[in-house]
Length: 108
Image (tube, rainbow, N blue to C red; front, side, top):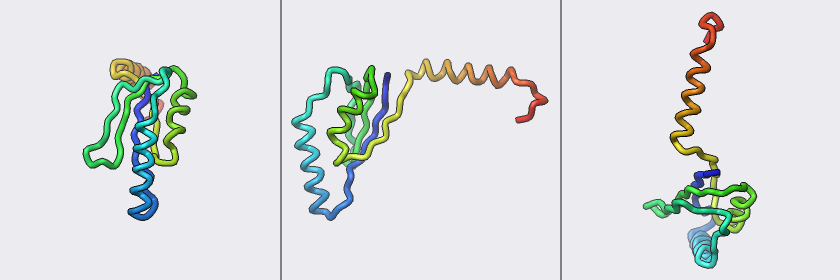
């Protein structure tokens, strides 16, 4: 399964506290090695340096959650399951065809 993860720093303190939070996160990141069960296909940082995004493959959401749990004190991140665009387009077409098969007198 593929996932798109975006993240932003949890900067909820003073400037000095936020600086310590980011420093601690960077230390944790430099000591972290992702599990072989989780494959980071893309790992990106935003130009404005306030977060980033990743495209990840993992067979188990538990494996992914295990990796993300290491950074939850420092980051907010939504995790969105994702499909390859060809699969998403095929499913969209199935939906179009289903709706087209509905009787016109059934309303919107």
